[in-house]
Image (cartoon, rainbow over all chains, first blue to last red):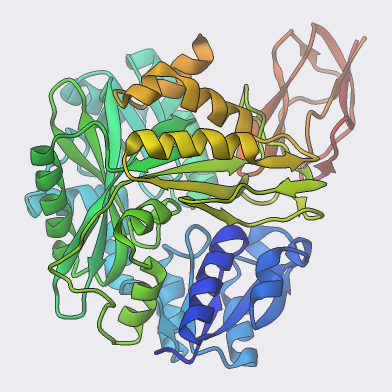
Length: 447
Length: 70
């Protein structure tokens, strides 16, 4: 096993990785920015190093400062969590060059999947279904209009280097495309340092279903089941569940097989996620993108499989066997994750502030991955995720009942949260029925 | 006269309007950023932008004055 690991992240995911490190007897090193000094992950790591001021560019995105912290503490491996540097192949390469272990796939795999246009083209060649879309970056509005004419409206405008829904918008005709293209390009440049834009056919009624894969050293790629991530606001996920209530066993089998093909095409090593869009009207599925890292919503897969995914990442990085028999992944029951954000429940606007009360639910089938505790301050510098409230039940009905009780029992004071929204979601007939799509939150808010 | 104030703690990402500009109700004056989200700050009424109290890179607290439209 690895002797030590530096976790190049913050909040709940840093805490999550540190917990598995402790379980496996791996010495953990946290890095933190000035405003995060009081957070639980800093306290729970065996050692913690201040790496810079609040601004991400000066701290959690500051590769040299992170490598210096590893050198100072003698950390032998780096786990990037998600976001920040997790999908940055240049950083992964610099970790390897420093003689450290990178807990993630090869920089080559990351590079191939990092650009969405390249990833789409590669998947198409590998026989994975992709939607109609552009095969090279769209240079300007004229090119966008020409491409959209071929693809057919409505189209989705996306940043090729993007993620997290930032800079994405749908256009139903040339006027919206003209306006949306410029906005998308300026955001792409600002958030992802690349102005490359792609267009894809926009699916009106879609479910967002992704597959957790695990690439092994011998070249095998395992599919550990799917997660339905169709509950979204601003193209960002708010709640996830597994199994997906919206796909048949036959469609699930085809999607899992396609995800394995996708992983094999880039010689994927470790934990990754292949995201698909499912067209509700036709039952077709198509490749969206691959996330070459641990996913935020990985706990729902852990709850139904009993597998610690971070432990598998550590084992694979250390050159050891995984902890379970590869041919025999049993899934039991149903799991849901609710993302508890520091934002108001009506308009979903950010609400930084100081937490004066934090009372988590507990009980059978309840797991809370939290980044904060009472007394902590939530600053405007990072994303609004406070905690992931995860529920497991024998079936979907039991998981949702547990979710309703847990949301009612979760008490966070001092700032606005979206707990009330989750209460509404769980009370809605559409979500409860399982027959929903990515337009669900919009409909809840319109009504 | 209408005072435009910050709804939340945020960083000032972009200042779109300038003092002396004629603005209409709903025009974007400033774009804030908080928790990886852009939040446009809009004029609440038409008139002249007589005061712009923030600059790009500033951090505003909830309730801080951003602009005055007269």
